[in-house]
Image (tube, rainbow over all chains, first blue to last red; front, side):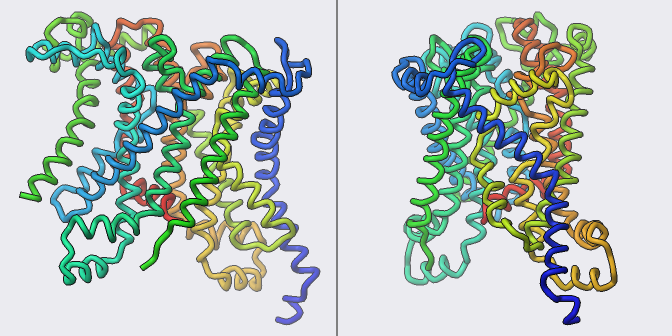
Length: 294
Length: 268
């Protein structure tokens, strides 16, 4: 036994095995993650139709001063804020409801999760058809009922595509909150009940603080997915009306593949990446500080 | 009373979820006149199953389906082969630079796809892989999420099992295949289902990396079909139903795995 565990030879052999098993992964992540990330940074410093002329920080100073870039970032930020708040409020409300011993809760859970597993193409096309101000079925139903027609895609386009996004994703946040709720020991609630705390008080003093890690995770996920939303603009609104829903990734896509300016679009990708990484790190940090245990 | 309120809330949320999807099915069976009629048609007078055939005549929808199956299938297979292998190495082996490599792997979780989109497009253009299966498949062969999931699952498997197999003279590959892999089946099911569904639905890369209708996947082919024939909503709806049904059926049959999978990612 002792001879078998002798260091050097055996450990060396395990290390070789480890690297042999890892080889495909190392090649893959180098070629399809780290090389592209290096390239996007390098291209961001270049300009011209072939993105081959060095311009230093030129693209970055241009992007920071470009009203269209700033506008699309504000649009994206607004979209993300609505999605984050909606995910937390609606996801938690549904999780609290479905956490009760109700008949048919499995059915509710399945139904509410279905849109999360459908393509943004389905969701986008379907809601564009429903909400269309002229031909949309919703307006035809509203008119048949004698109600005023809606123009939401014109009057509140950002809120509308955020709502459609929530329609798709809220089942997912509900399941995350449900897992968080089921991790809270029953004894805390029982002890609080004996002490005379009502349901409202128990929610604010026990459920919500102990759910903090889940809430944090939900908000991180919602920010990350909100900041990189694309299909909603591409499929439902085309960025419009005007540029009211010109989400950042949609803007970058157009600069890259319609204007064919790879340098400028790469620099904008890097800027958005920096925002996403910064946000993630700050949220995770803040989260670690606010975690509670009882 | 309180119970009634809960049912009302969940019932309302379920209706808001289901009614649009049912309308999509209804729309796919309407005549063109019904889709435009002033009094909204919610149930078609007589279901137009011919809409589905019409869709295949107007667009290479058969190609879309084959492309989606090939791309999502190949990527899922690659994940099932590589993610557990890499997860196993990080769970059970000690070797130089292990932590560095693991951090480098996890860091890729913070890199959204749009960051890779432009350089990958240039790379694929340079090697002539735009508008090919290789071009659609290779950027997604593995991901840190799947590897991390497998590592978490493999870690609790007792080291003694591996040592015992080594003493019995099993090769390292054999240990992985016969000792580790069979124990990871539930995690593999979660991984395979998630990977397939997300790749089946993937939109941005197939949109960027394909240039002819014959190479498009269903989500992209359908969206561009809709841009071209934007008044033919009954046909767009029929395509949506075709895109929807496989993942919906897969999900309803295996919803426990999905729910467990989502819960696993939420808990650290």
